[in-house]
Image (cartoon, rainbow, N blue to C red; front, side):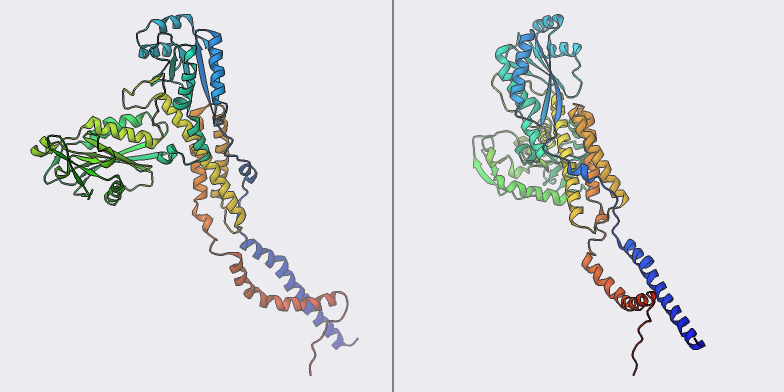
Length: 526
């Protein structure tokens, strides 16, 4: 073998090794590096736990203590209550039966009224404990069943058992509303109730369309603290409330009034159609100064000008009350207050504070989820003696909000998991992964607390789970690569890598022949 052949073979070997090195670098280093740097980053998520969620199965457990004069009557009442609630699975009653202690029984038969009897029961049993309700027999009762503001109801005898079961069903526990909260059905209560949240802003707006002719004597800040503040203090364990007040001057509105003659001292009044009232809310929204990320409940006092007073809503034409009011579900309420003829002559209008604020509190009760209680024959519901809600109404609201938050968290997580499965190029960073894992853990803990009857802990945990799930679902980083789908990715990378891959693929044939000991094919030249 001469020197030229040896040199030719060496050159060929160097050329083949250079090709092999280029192919090796491209395939072993370049291709994995490109694959790694272009993959969508996703942290590991608990998909199995999320898929196991069943929004129709969770419930809240509660304790009911039945205290009767005899063990037989207590067991009979417990059996009737279980039969009444057997078709409702959103609430589980843990019924405990006891015979009334002799001293307490004698006291209940001798005290003058039910308020004093409630105090006597409270001296023996803890009426301040959440999620526990007492049914107590009191024979000298003026009605079959009596329900007050504390967590206790009195019944007279065995004949009152059906009425008591109805009171527990429609007033105390309201399982149909709980079912709507769990399944998110648009029932009547849910249509009015505001969405749950950690914080609410309550804004009182005094609308004064005619300040040049009438002065309105109304201290909005003071009445907010005295009435609304006292009301929401009892609900501070559910939400944090921020109270605000403002005046809106010269906000006129065309009610399209119709004058109606009557026998009043003025000889007439004005009516407006109910269909016009939602347009007033649009005007109020345009002028309202409240801007916040937190949900707001709006209360508006509209001081009717003297030229339009007294004003009545057409649906309430026979109502002679100086205050006409209407509600907008989930938004708030409006009170239309008309000055009297004497106030118009004096030029000073002093709205009836108790009537106005009582109307606002009635509206707030519905907006926050406390429903009106329908009358039950044979059952007496003691009227509210203060602005504060009844203690068992707070428990009912805690149960409703707990199921709402748990259901919302589970639905958000299931929707997010489904979305991530359908769209492969959604980025899931560490922060989103932590929020999702936290939401899953908190949801499971909330359900465990609710099943154990730990109502306050269940509500707090469920609200945190809902917040974490919503934070993960609304995370802006999930949208980072949605504008860059796979087809566009390949459309960019193929023109970039294809020219490089052609010589690599063509050189692989000669490289394989050389490795097998066969001479490489030479290009034909003319």
